[in-house]
Image 1 (cartoon, rainbow, N blue to C red):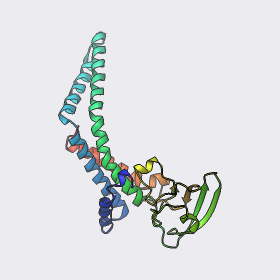
Image 2 (image 1 turned 90 degrees about the horizontal axis):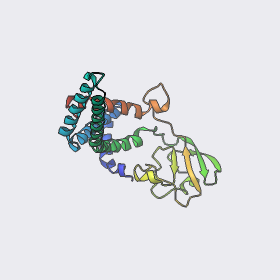
Image 3 (image 1 turned 120 degrees about the horizontal axis):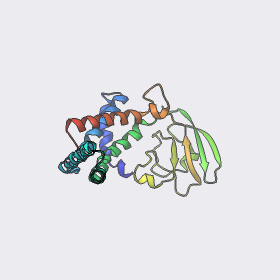
Image 4 (image 1 turned 60 degrees about the vertical axis):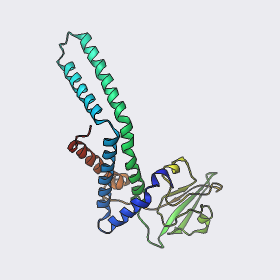
Length: 238
């Protein structure tokens, strides 16, 4: 389990409860709203709003002074420009830490959506092409039934393998697994295979466009940004 999978017991329960009352696109929209609320709350309470507001006001007044300065007052314009740059960098510096904190709740939600909404869940007995790629680059193709029970594949997988998880790639654990673990598990470190690719279908929420646009990512990110900007305006978050 990766760092951003730690909230999975809670988020999976919430998602299961949503499943009983809402279709998949609406559930993604609700998760976008939840992520926005948590993210903006984290930013609001981890940032110094008074200082950011004061810096923003000074930046606005400095910009106004630059616009209104006579064109012949070169030295004054240069001084004001330096002051504006300094204030802007201070504003970025003060907001950077809280912005990183605000991104953490989004990553926990991202982990859930990546696992539950990226690929279609094949029905039991569905035949899927699987490509086995060895460390030497040799390629072997099999037709396997879902959930995976092919002995040739099972022999290469670690004890934590979850055959019911529809994932397109099984590989040896890497550094990214410390953040987001593969829900289906991983290959054994001593395996002679580099990866196993399984032809599961991408879950599409729209009938048009490429897979990356028709999946949950575009819907989630668009709504989350819209919700966040709305909350930022309504609650006057700097």
